[in-house]
Amino acid sequence: MKKSLTLCLLLVFMVVATNGLCANIDSPIVKNGDFETLGIGNVLGDNQWKVYKNIPAWETLSGPGIEIQRGTVADAKSGKNYVELDSNSNSSMSQTLFLAPGDYQLAFWYMPRVTINEYKNNNDNANGINFSIDNHEYDHDNDIESFNKESYINRFYVDGMEWEKVTLDFAVSEESGTDFDLTFGAYGKVNSKGGFVDNVSVTAVAPTPTPTPIPSSLLLLFSGGAGCLVLRKKKVMN
Ligand SMILES: [Ca+2]
Ligand SMILES: [Ca+2]
Ligand SMILES: [Ca+2]
Image 1 (spheres, rainbow, N blue to C red):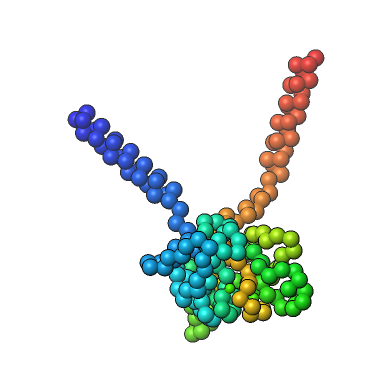
Image 2 (cartoon, rainbow, N blue to C red):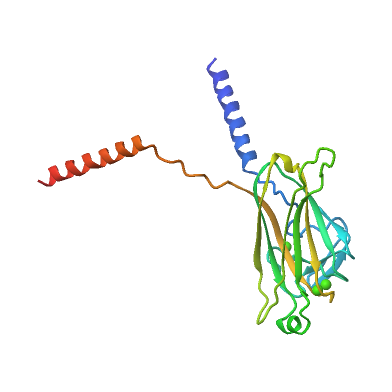
């Protein structure tokens, strides 16, 4: 009897421990957001670059493809690889995200490659990167509102190249659907040089809690309590 109880407790402990372990495994919403996985047979050595039609989780949406650089022009923000979307021409890449209703933040790291002089001479947005999250399941029959959140960044560098964190907050509602396209694209002058992108992530953000007003009766109670404390303190001091 005692033995079976011990066994039972051990089993319960194992289930709880396993569940706890599973809950701690964080599955990222954006897959291969660090661009470190290139797929079977796609080997890239240090100081090499190559243009790919597809890499795991990402596919070319327009243009020649996704240019992966590995320590060629700069060090990656994270890992060894980063992306340049002005590959042989301006290109865009995309992956599908599955999102439940809630608040989210898209974040990635950006670094401009073209210098201030080139920028000034051409005024051509040479390092432009646009990025968006679209609902690709727009329901025309039921006139469910389309979802689109987009922005862009274009900078140039003066003295040294530096990675910069870029964020975009967005909210998904019940009507937004569940499938979204996360897209990055190069824009501006096609000169084989553009904005570098690395370490892309989307994280669920807890909504900011609305402060609950304290009922006046409670305030009275608090102020009464504070009064008692003051009186008590005075009494002790006396
Ligand atoms: Ca990387
Ligand atoms: Ca390039
Ligand atoms: Ca360019």
